[in-house]
Every structure is written in C-alpha cells, then in structure tokens.
Amino acid sequence: MRRIFWSISCTGVLVVFIVGCFFYWRNSQLAAETNSYALLVAGEGDAASQKVLQGAMAAAKDQTVEVRMYVWKNDVEDQLKRMKETDGMDGVICFLEEERSDSGNGEKIKEICGTIGLPVIIIGQSTDEDEIYTDEKKAGILMAQEALNEGAESIVFLFQKQDMAAACQLEGAKSVLPDGIPYLEAEYEQRFVPDETWKKMTKERSFVLALGNAATEAAIEMKKSGQLEGDVPVIGIGRPMEVESLENGTVSALLYPSYFTLGYRTLEKLHNDMISNGEKIEGQIPYRVITLENLYDSENVSYVFPLLD
Image 1 (cartoon, rainbow, N blue to C red):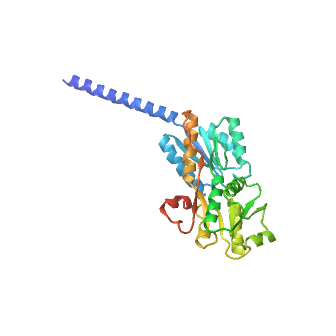
Image 2: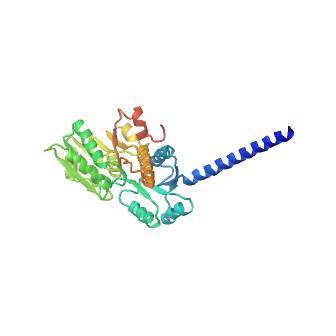
Image 3: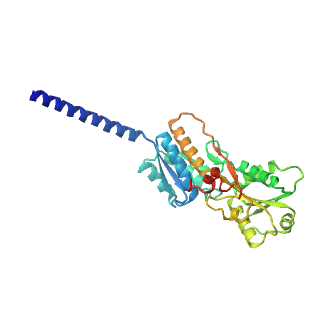
C-alpha cells in the first residue's frame, strides 16, 4: 500500500513538473513572438507626446504587443540602431511635434530606418497613404467656416513661410470662402511686421486665421501688444494644456486634434503592416473646433487637456 502511495505521489509530482515545464516553454515562446515597438518623441514631459503614448499603449493592449517610449537624442542614428539591435524593437513610431514642420527630421529618420531595416511610421502633416496624419486641409476649412459663421466680412491669413501644415490649411480655408469676400495672405519668415494693407484689413470686420502653431503664437502676441487694433477675432491652432488665450478672449476659437487617436491608429497600422493582415487603417485624424463655450464639455477634455481624462 505504501509502495502504491509513493508511486502515485511520484507520478503526480512528475506530471506537475512536466506541465510546469510546458507552460514555461509556451510563455517563453509567446514572449519571443510578441512584437515590440518604439515610440520616438521630442520630449517626455510634453502633453501631446504623453497622449500619443496612451493611445499607442491602448492599441498595443488590443493587439497583444508591447510599446516603449524613447526621447529624441542628437545621435538619433545610433539611437535607432540600439532600438533594433539591443532592445529588439520591431518597428518605430516617430512623433516630433515641434520639429515636424520643416526641419527634415522625419525624412532623416525614414532614411536611417530604411538603411538598418527598421519599419517606421512618421506621425505628421502629410497626405501620404502610408502615414497617419492630422487633416490640415480640413482644419483650414473648419477655421474659415467658424469665421464665416461668426460674421466675418473679410479674412486675413497669417502664416509662417515654409510651414507645410499652414499651406494645407490655407488651401482648405480658401476652398470654402464665398465669391467676393476679400482676403489677405500675410506670410512671414521669422517675425511678422504689419503693413498698411494689414492695418486696413483688420479694421473692417476681419477675422485673422492664424495658420499653424507658430502663426497662432504670433497672433496672440500681437493681440497682447496692441498690434491688432480693436476687437479683431483670431482663430488658430491650439497646443495641449494651453487655454489661457481662450479664457481671456485673446482668441475666439482654437482647433485641436485627438492625440490619443494619433497614437492608437499609428501603432495599429504599424503592427498590421508587420503581420501583413491587409486591414485598412484610416490615416486622417480630424481636428475639433474649441471655443470658450465648449471648452469644458466632456467630449472636448481629451483634446484640450490630454493628461486629465
């Protein structure tokens, strides 16, 4: 009887051991099969980058993959090589909010990743089918429509030279202007200096549409310094967490994209491309018009205050 008991006990221990080994092996296999992706951002503390990361992490959970955030370094070529060779990253998402307009960093990263064989998607302001991008042309349309709805009798477009996003916004805005409405294109390089035409236009029930982040900041400074005389309404592009200009009436409306959606769709597309499942991911990320009246509406919180919802 004792012999039978010991035989059964040993058999049980052996079964448990074998099952344990199997699950250990299987978990190791699954870990090895899990794709890992890098999110390269300009700054770790940036609100937009954090929201993009939240979106990417949500997509990673749904896709059963891993995502890790990296902060841009000057030796980005070595950084990308380490991602692939040392950290085992299978692909990289690049979100450089401050640099993406005209610095060429996105193209530089594409070139490096192409050389080392690391799949990459640049989050930007593009119309490339392979990209995830904010719909700048639609943003311009929304800005013009908001101004017209508020009774604009003329439009002044303020934009920085070589700002690709602003160029797309200008195209969109002009496409919906009624025939006969006067408008002025005020382009500048480093600092805008108002001329007589600008001064005349901004006195005639004109709205200033500040195209792009740089022009929006310039328009806000002009309002504060008195260069924009009278109660000239300004509509521009907003930055996350920066709402003072809306609250104090410096601007009448700001447009914000969904940074969470940017992160989610980009990770989703990168992984789908890796596993070649052929699923089409919508690339355009729309903007939302935010005014003082709807600033704190529940559906707008994630747009304006990315870290609070």
